[in-house]
Image (cartoon, rainbow, N blue to C red):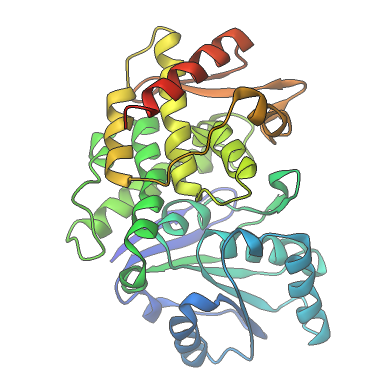
Length: 344
């Protein structure tokens, strides 16, 4: 079992391994379980062990991150008359973590919550760092808040139930952490499976990268923006396909685009590295999409500063820049991106 501690802006533990649920301690007061129905067995066992009084199961996926579902969960809590010292236990993948954290951030102006990530994506990314939120029809994660859990408990036994692609796509975020940090071990994903003896150490290493960055910049005013590597184009692809393209696949395609931007700016050519990732991931193919198709979604991206969209560009492993880019460069990279993808 690996234990990490986030120290800023609030302190909370992250436990990764098998048997971590034995370490869970809920605060005094009522508790509510919000869970993805795909992991209902795991969630209900947790509820029984901790004596959780109230439970609400939802269908996971991006359909959970809507105003309608958000309102439904808030109404569930209000109908039960739950007070401010209620603890929300969120069990599921990244969409449930995002939704549940936002519910906790806003019900009665904020209640505590614990996160129990059950996918690789939620372990290495969504459950860590305090970003919570939901989508709007106009774009992804346009509504949200920073609200930090009181603990993250990643029970690796839950990962053994994941479909192979779902397991793989979450590791795209860990791979991204390898590009950001320059830690080459995080770029070695091909041998990882739910039974891999190095999975626990690998996930802990990936999470540690995010912890270091978010501790220094909890609310994304500076260095934390590096974690958006691959996400600007990735989120546009998700929105354009109405989330038919899974998040991990979209980010992988976005990483390739970012690598091409880096090459055009005179940086190291990281495209062979990202192409290796894409071949291993074998993501769903992209529909025919033009720059004009994606432009409306890019213009609504939440990472805009004033009127400029800032791109995270890797100039080498561990060497990134964040800045607006000329449209001529963006279009040139997009043409190269389509050309390279045609060879996969």
